Amino acid sequence: MISGLLNPWIRDLVPYSSARSEFSGSADVLLDANESWEGGNSGVNRYPDPLCRALRKEIESVMGLPYDMTAIGNGSDEIIDMLIRMFCAPGRDSVMIERPTYGTYSVFARTSDVSVVDIPLTPDLDLDEEAVLGGIEEHRPKIVFICTPNNPTGRVYPLEAVLRIADANPGITAVDEAYADFAADFRSAVPAIMDNPRIVVMRTLSKAYAAAGARIGILVASPEIQGVFMKAKPPYNVSLLAQEAGMRALQDAPRVRERIAETRRRREELSSFLSSLPFVRCVFPSEANFILIRVTDAASLYSYLLGKGIVVRNRSSDPMLGSTLRITIGSEEETGKLKEALDGWQG
Ligand SMILES: *Cc1c(COP(=O)(O)O)cnc(C)c1O
Image (cartoon, rainbow, N blue to C red; front, side, top):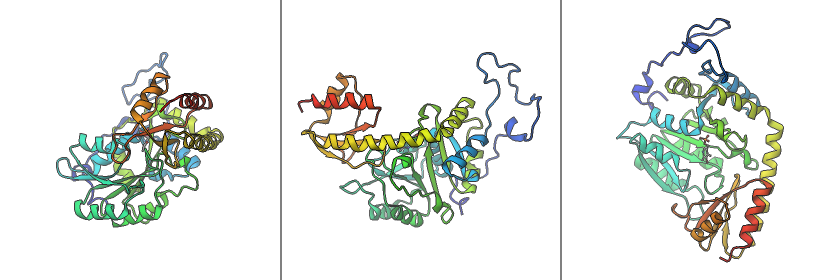
């Protein structure tokens, strides 16, 4: 079933066979990969594990994502790019997004000469299930991207709606759950992969696990799609340093839980503060580690904050997001500085 959706040149690809993937077991004389015999100061003279086995075992035990269903990308960005290259034929196929959403889906589509079908969210920024289903009928996109909790709105879509779309979609439904850890009682699409192997899920260590600099994105997919990803990806796509940093981030689980709780608490506190400001017209309820607000004049508030050394994201040019700013939940100190600056703004 999946093989009919894959680009034929990917399906038939004979993977590059790296020295380390041909070899399994233990040996102490490694003369197979033309590496340096000595590490110098860097300590990284050996190639990393192309399969990220230790990291994926840790992901299984900490995050509960089954080992044979995960693959690691150099950030979720690489996973998005790879999915498009696996399933979409340049110059012919399309992907679907529900705008406003994360910007990289359409950028990676365009770099592969794949067109983008935009389905607007409902006026209150919810997933427009009917419009998505209609768009699938009409355009037959190879991949439907669904971001939940959505960036930049912070909105979680009902899992039932996501699964109805995935079941009706003859192509791939890629559910981006980058902010799942911050949502209360979040219901993931991962268990649904068993029944519908056209669903793939993306997770990341960049947000709740505090490892954005390591670039660790996680693909969760049927073993069939996972296997194709493994053979089509660049062999050494996740560096040794990144794999080690990812392991450390996962082993820090108690601290991760504390940080998530703290982030949620601060999110609620900052939301009520923002609601009390006269120039804030709307605080969108968020399940992520950021808050989207609509203000009287986003452009001047943005420059005012910049003048105070505070950078937020101006989302005003997104469809339906006129005069909005997206603010990340920062540290106690950063949040304090933000509040102080906002208190002094004469909007
Ligand atoms: C931040 C973010 C990611 C994470 O991307 P990485 O490349 O893993 O850092 C993925 N999806 C969305 C919607 C995001 O906002």
